[in-house]
Image (cartoon, rainbow, N blue to C red; front, side):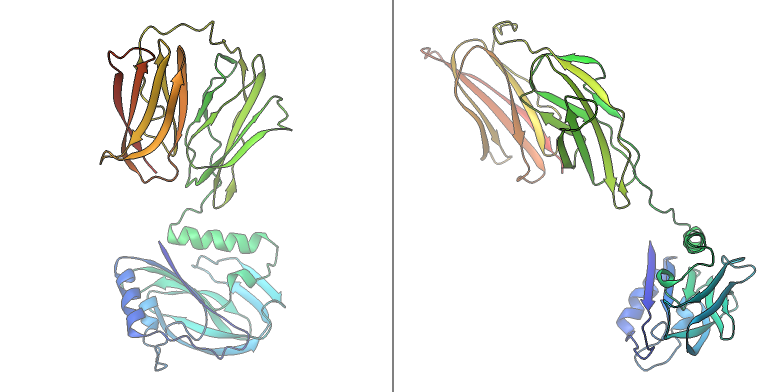
Length: 365
């Protein structure tokens, strides 16, 4: 974790109150070995009475008001993370009130501004935490060799704190349906491996050409599965996936192809008994598929219950002819937890009894 403070303006006359409550929170963080990055001037290290004792929390001996100026030349100093760096005149920081900072015994001068003084310090604070203070806003600097110098400075600061910058996520690895496979159903569950780092959603594409010109697209998937229904028979399909985090979208995965050869209900293997299969995937979020078989014309219900035995969804409640069936359950509006689904099937015209089976599934958001 990195604690960041910033205070810079056009006239340098505004002080932000840094009261005892704020100081206690910051001190607790620093005592745990926290990292501190500071940008700006007057507010940094001053309490409500205008005293500068709080500077010692951040590892600086003292500070004073500098000048109302344009950057002349910011020179990185030896033995600091800024060594060898140079920022030249910038109109972007015109009329900024720049404060001068002085390191304590454990600190190091990082930036010196020609004609004014010390405007950057790195060092060790009161509790051993790493600190870096800079009078200017990093975002406002103009590079001597744009954009490499500013980018390099940011990287050096992150390296100094031991922070790995977040990268674009890796491309997803596809799992199923496998490449060049033949699918005998109009319903297909697509699966891929989770990408890293810190992926928040996925983009899924499915098309009947490998150019993805008229794709079916879902760009808000939070799970690593996608259920597609009503695929056409005797068709070639291509599919691919990419991942997203706060940096942006990854490259697309490999493009995989499959062909549909959907068997009609009359040609399928006729079930000779009632069956209720385990849902897939399980655990799931938020969509899963439940398959069941009916060996004769029956009145069928498929109901989902919570742990209290309360109905939360009725998936099927109608007559079903002989066949194998699959139904999708979308639990987007339900909380995480354990649920049960129950199949009840009664043959038409047969009052001898019903087939009843219950299975457990887990919703994990």
